[in-house]
Amino acid sequence: MSTIHSRLPLYPVPYIRAKNGQPGYSELLTTPAANAATLADWVDGLGTYGGPLNPSSEPGHDHSGGHFGKPLFCTVASLSLDGPQGTTGVLYPQRFRSITIEDDAGGTTTNETMVSPTFIWVPPCDATDGAYVNLGISARVDLTTTTLTASDVLTVFFKVGEDEQGFVVSGPNTTGVKNLASSSTSERVSVRVGAVNLVEVRASVVRAAGGSSRGCKLDINELELGVYST
Image (cartoon, one colour):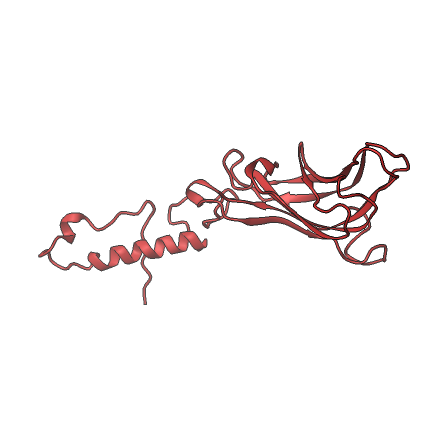
């Protein structure tokens, strides 16, 4: 058994050879078969056959933009932070989990608390047009306690590098799980590709005028950064 391949760029059977009435030489079958095998191997990363390597310096069609394919949704970093806290040996350290906002003064005020940073690795791609240059945010937070009112505005901010995006938490006066996610390209963050990126989280409460002292506590259960293709 033999395996046939072409070289990139691919060339089809010459038109003159494919016309009706022409002799049925073997190239009529071997050329399309070789081209198909070459494309399949290049896409799967099994061989380059003269084709370029992707931005990670590996063979394969990785959807990192340009002729490596239109970017698809791709999770770059997914952090689960809802494990047990404060126990020796567990995988979920106390840092980067809980945000507590307390205020003993009434009136309209903005209260902010920053949680400890964490770091994520962003794979390499073209630094200008690559798929991982701008990432969307998806997070799940659990509002465990709250004395806020429905008129107060609770916002969770995610800062990656120099970019920061804020997401308003619905129902700040009710406890429970709240899902936050980028809904447009304007809510993405620019990152350094092929490098470790610093991620910081903070929360802010803007309280409605008047009323008693109030605050809240929320846990960052999950945080995901990924590619959102449009």
